[in-house]
Length: 487
Image 1 (spheres, helix red, strand yellow):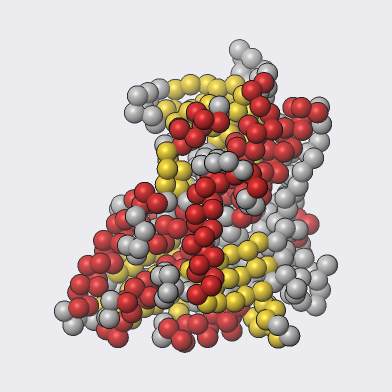
Image 2 (cartoon, rainbow, N blue to C red; image 1 turned 180 degrees about the vertical axis):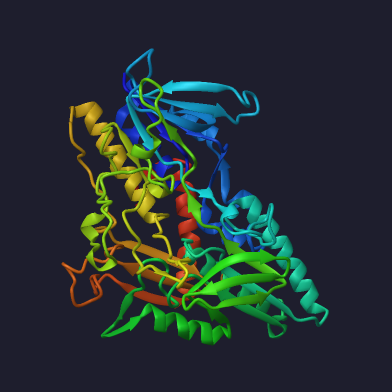
């Protein structure tokens, strides 16, 4: 019997676990290790954050699903990898600390034949002084509990606006190297929508603060959409939307410090600026989850398994080179660790070889460089591909990965909510192919296939986004025929 251990139960890890168990059956063991007892459909946290969806609609307990599917669940936090085993056994192992209230603090060493690192990110609020809902002065929608608190603060702002007092709301990212600009964009427009619905929009200033070089960059270098016989850049598309909603945007900004009611930020030209606020939702940058790695004798090998960011090295080209020499071929295809072929890193847990958007910095070296997004559809695709590879290795004796999911080859679709409501809601539906521009294949169209890179906005897109929420919750709960729903 082979044992596959999966660290993390987000989109990528949960997808891998379900596909592995479906393929491997009862003769092999799938073990999921996650510090959280619940699964969270993170894209819908924005609706929780404006009070339009209750948190129980975006989470569900993992244990009942795993019991039903015969997957072993350990509510614990992984702290150390031992890919070569230890002095007791050459079999790979992972050290975990239980977060389950019944075993809190207990330590266990779990052996594995194959390991998938899908731990996701550590929310690095500490990167910017004053950032975050716990030790800082801003709110967040990164977790359901964060989103609930954000909704409470927003409700207070709306009540203040109803008294006739003006309020400034700043929404965006809280560091020069943040990712997930799409989520910040969605939340900004949902907040603006709620202010209009409450009849207080004229007394509120809504500002989008971002490290993107221009609107519509989203950490993927922007897009050029096909709309019938016409083509339009995502920058022009987004500028039009911001004008329509009378929203201000501050781009090319790295937030450096946050005081109560005041954001300090530096722009690419080196100028320092401040922005007062009454309400601020700023997303944090991401890091790896602080996993360490040791060889069989206990020597620290963390630096050979993980990049300085804490994310796992996989089959990417990590050679340092100028931006114009980076290519789609640098990106991983199999997500296999180059030193340990039974170890894989997927979703946000793998180390990207480089940014997708052109990175910039201020004259004194402060980075203003969006990190590449690796969430949602790409994460699910990676999870499925690695699950199929490992099952082929176990069932068929394959010695090399049999499935790939390169972001330099795959397409992705995103529906960004710009306000919820069955009759009043809208969303921006965007697709691109590939995610990482491939200038060798598409030299004249900004590295992407013009037929598969499109954008549209309207009520119908909102209905689709709401339907996808229901479908992906259904899939994550592994209800009948769940596997037919695409990633």
